[in-house]
Length: 283
Image 1 (tube, rainbow, N blue to C red):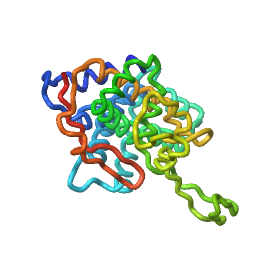
Image 2 (cartoon, rainbow, N blue to C red):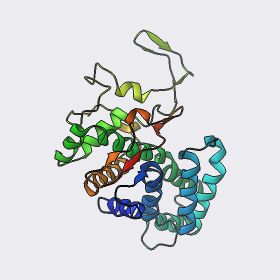
Image 3 (spheres, one colour):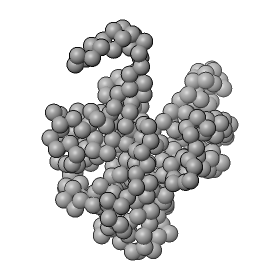
């Protein structure tokens, strides 16, 4: 993965002219996850194109972005297309579909659920993390120097996950019994929404929580859940984002934001947040 992500970054940005302004959301953050998945799962051209089309329509700025439920038919078509044309020898998707054909394990529903998770659930988090990380580091030279000085970028990615919290809320939880937290009673049957962004900016846990500090230990951050409730895409998100961001900062060391960071407009939904555009002069 460490070698795959930089190669894909180069392929997505190869047509830029040195010094020109490039929107890294449109050119990198949104298409990169689709390119990574196409390589890892052995998606054929049509499945990869459908996935990219879904990402563009859902995550890029538009006058009327579709509601999540309105994209379900597209998601199902992508999954069906991916499993029907899984032909790359040795790919994970080819092995899963072969196992389903031979032993019905995983079942059709299990295979569809697994692909739904891999193709969609963490996609938005990764896109927002990459865009937000580049935006944060280009606007803060001191943090950029810290990034370059760290031999292992994973702790820096964890701090960026904490600071940016691209997934604002965790999935809903349902109380099975009466619970009391901090004087508040949650009765059995009630729905609980955990605000990951709020936990990640708790001043009792993180000094100066509103500032990114790549030198701090962000071990308690909850951006991708924790323990048995951690996101299954945790390793993939951290690995891809670390490799992609590091390659951008190393390949184009004199790059700068083309606008003041305060002018950046953020997409802020009910559960996710990320910059709508990140105009950068690559040089």
